[in-house]
Amino acid sequence: MVKKYEFLEHKADVLYKAYGRSFEEALENAALALFNTIAKVEKLKKNKRIEIEERAKIPEELVAFVLSDLLSQAEINELFLKEFEVKEFSKKGGKIWLKGLAYGEEMTPDKGKTYVKAVTLHETKVEEKEGKWMIRVLLDI
Image (cartoon, rainbow, N blue to C red):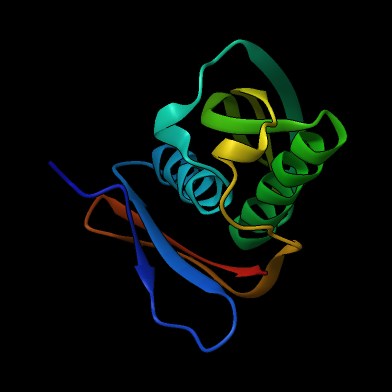
C-alpha cells in the first residue's frame, strides 16, 4: 500500500506531500492531510456534507483553490472535515475543472488540534512520475 501523505520539516508552518495513483487520489489525500492537521479525524463522523466546485489553469492552482475552499467552507459552516471525494474531474482547453464532496461533523473543542489560517500557493507543487502523483502543500498556521 502506498502511503497517503507525509509531513515534512518546516520552520514555522505545516508542509506535507500527498500521494496517489491519479491526480484526483493525490488531491483527496492532500485534503486528508489538511483535515488531520486541523482535527482528530479518527474521532469524526460523516454526518454533514459540503459541495465544492473549482476551476484553474494549472494543477498547482487547482490544489490551492480546492484546499482553500474546503478550509473556508469548513470555517463558515463550523465543521471539522473527515474526508474529501473528487466526484468529477476534467481537463479541457487549457482549463482544469473539479467537483467534489467533503464530509465531517460540527466543530467541538475536544476534536480540534491546530488552527490553519490559509493554504498557500507558495511551495505548492504537483508532479507525476511513472503513473504516481505527488502534491506538496504548505499551510500557514
